[in-house]
Image 1 (cartoon, helix red, strand yellow):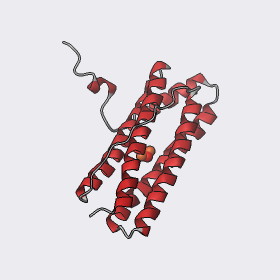
Image 2: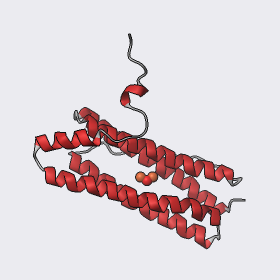
Image 3: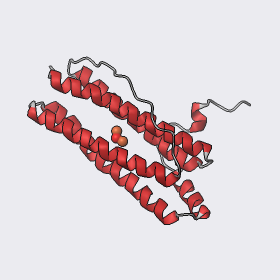
Length: 176
Ligand code: FEO
């Protein structure tokens, strides 16, 4: 049976993961509007991964005999100023999420919840990856600076990111 304190904290984290998804969807919209489809795609895959994170917690709570209560999700920002601004904010956000995951892990240890510790170990590793990816792109964007050609090359590279559905697939098959 799932400890009530752990259940409550996991419920909160489901909301945080959905907010992360919402934040990335907002960022993806910024890139769509800026005609940078590769950045938009990379961030859209990120959005889909965050929904998967939320579902991992959602399923875990129910697998343990608990009950999820969904919380209200805040409106994400949309006042992005540049690709670098977006990725600096993505990195800051992921650093914040790392703190949340670490706190959850500490709670699972305190409550002797071993299954939650196993689940959270996956998230601890995932956060290392999340911070690394965002940091890499921040550093690349700093190198790009005001060079439009370099920005377009990076856009093409990021657009090759695998995962999730494409913008086209979500719009259905093209009419014949
Ligand atoms: Fe759910 Fe980006 O970590």
